[in-house]
Image (cartoon, rainbow, N blue to C red):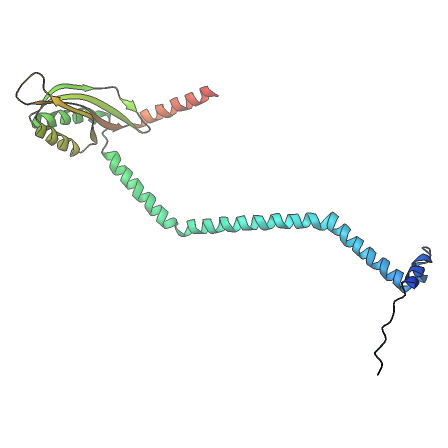
Amino acid sequence: MKAPSITKIDFKVFLDDFRNLNPKDVGAWPIVPRVTVLFGLFAAILVAGWWFVWADQLDALAARQQDELKLREEFVAKKKQAVNLDLYVQQLSEIDRSFGALLKQLPNKSEVESLLIEINQSGMGRGLQFDLFKPGQEISKDFYAELPINVRLTGNYHDFGAFAGDIGRLSRIVTLNNVSITANPQTKDGSLVMDAVTKTFRYLDDDELAAKRKAAQAAKGGKK
């Protein structure tokens, strides 16, 4: 039994077909040249479409896909915020209440004098002798003013500790700073001398806050 013969391709015939083409009579061309030119035109159209149209469109598509990812991330973040909104509102309310409670511990301008008297009486009530009680210059902060008071007391160590405890139990905020305790050089009875800076605070009233904001705006405008 003979094996099937393999048809041999005569490339010379193909080349002759291309050599004898008449560009003015395309309809008379052999099938191979016509198919080859058709595929060539198709490939040229694809390349031209890619270069002039599809490349920009693909770049735009990639950019839109990146925008979509960003929008999804923003959506997820805002959704989490919306889900936790009630919790945030509750936390803000608690912060407002805590801030209000702290603010009530700051005296206003008219209450500072009575607070100074309380500090003085706290020391005298413990048997301490005030050698110095000198309020300093107020230091203005964001919404409150700090009033330092330089004090020097004579007494014993136990009374100093009791005085510090009394200061901490006052209804208003009072702190002891830069405390220094030394032996009393004027006596030999074992008494001590305590130098300290007592600081109290008061909140600024509406007029003071308005003046502070006005001064800040004026200073900001002067820098321009």
